[in-house]
Structures are given as C-alpha cells and as structure tokens.
Image (tube, rainbow, N blue to C red):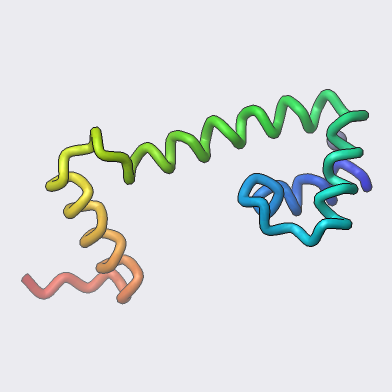
Length: 81
Ligand SMILES: [Zn+2]
C-alpha cells in the first residue's frame, strides 16, 4: 500500500468498516509511515470535533438548527419560509 491508497481508505479505517485484509494493509502501512500516522492523528481530531456536534453539551436548539440547515441543504437549499 502507498500513501495515496492509504489516504483513500482512511475514513473506513477510522470507522472500522474496512474489510479485514484492507484494515490489515492499512495498519501495516501506518506502522511504516510517520506521515500517515500524523495524518491519521489529524483525521481523528477532525472526526472527534465532528462527533462533538452531536454530543449532549451542544444546546438542543443548536443541534435542531443544524439538523434543519442540513435537511434544507440536502433538499436543494430552497427555503420557503
Ligand atoms: Zn503513508
């Protein structure tokens, strides 16, 4: 596995959704490659922040507003209100 391939599978790697063989290959690349280890660290932080948006310490009205904003965005961004 080369860095570019590794970067392509990093999301699945973090979510644990990779097939075992690929997870294994990613692990082995990670053991050899300080660059990808650093990248993974940054990805983990980004994922953590993204998950934080759904955590309990975010006020419910903020979550609600975000949910509606996303729903609007997904439905084409048209606001009729
Ligand atoms: Zn690498």
